[in-house]
Structures are given as C-alpha cells and as structure tokens.
Length: 202
Image (cartoon, rainbow, N blue to C red):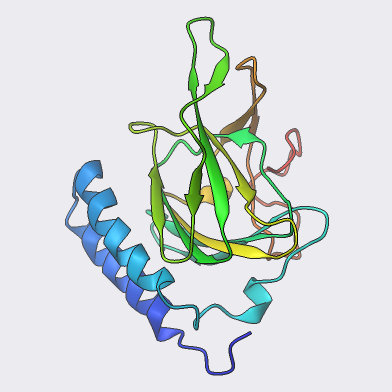
C-alpha cells in the first residue's frame, strides 16, 4: 500500500515500550503511558509492510511484528477481511488495541450471577488512531469484528506476553470455555506453541 515505508516508527515504539517496562510500572500507569505510545504509532499508516497486512478470505489473520526477547510483550497486526469476527474470547494478560486502517467494533462481556456472559454496554467502535485497553483487571472478555462488510480493516495489538503462546479461552454465551493457544499466521510451521493440537486456534 505504501511506497516509502517508515519502519523506524515501529522500532521507536518497541524501544519506548521496552524502556517503559524497564521502569516496572504498575498496570494502570503502564496502560496509560502505553496508550500514548500506541496512539502515536497508529496515527501514521506508512510503516506496516504489505506482507503483514494481507487478509485471508476464510478467517482473520494475526501476524507477529515483534516479540520481546524476554517475552514481556508482543506486537501483532490483526488483519480483518470484510465482515470477519472473533468468537468471544479473553487474553489473560494486559493488552492495547490501536486502529490503523478501517474500523472495528469491540463488544465487552461480563458474567451474570449464574455464570453466563452478558454484553456489557454498547460495542466500542475504534477508528484509525484510536486505542482501547483490556486486562483481567479492567475487563478482559470481548468479541471483535470488522466494522465493514466490504473492506479490509487492520488493528495493531500489543500484549503483556508472547500472546501466540499464552493459554487462554474462547467462550459460549452460557459462560462455558474452551482453552486454546493461538500461534501466529506468519509461520510456515505448525503452531509450535500447541503441538498437541487439542485446541483449535482462535
């Protein structure tokens, strides 16, 4: 899409987030300062290589852009084909979602007294440059979908771990869960984080 890519934007974001984590902030400060860093990154759509922005007609793609050497965080591009959505799922680590291209909706869920999942408020619409946070502390269960039925959308996700290796869950509306490990779309190997293949990727 972009002729003259500016990869230094991503490098600067990675360096700045690593420096922030070196200070061992509490989660509230981490999400606050990380929000600003990610907003600065997704304010510009001139740095993501085309090969990491390709949709798949069958399911959304999650391409690993960077994983910290100590697995303190990972950066992933989520590429949504027209009308694609996730199941209801969690992350079990902190996360920041920044919209780069197009738009997406995120519907949060909470548990009712009987353990079922109920939608919490209205879906949040993310437009380019906007950032949303998730974590077990502030709300971690949601469902995300491309806001458009006729175009690709791309969001940049940052997680407090190697998200492709984190055991987490998808949920039915009754609150029952099924664990999975997602891996990443940009690998020619099987999902090396879940070789048993007991659980499908999200």
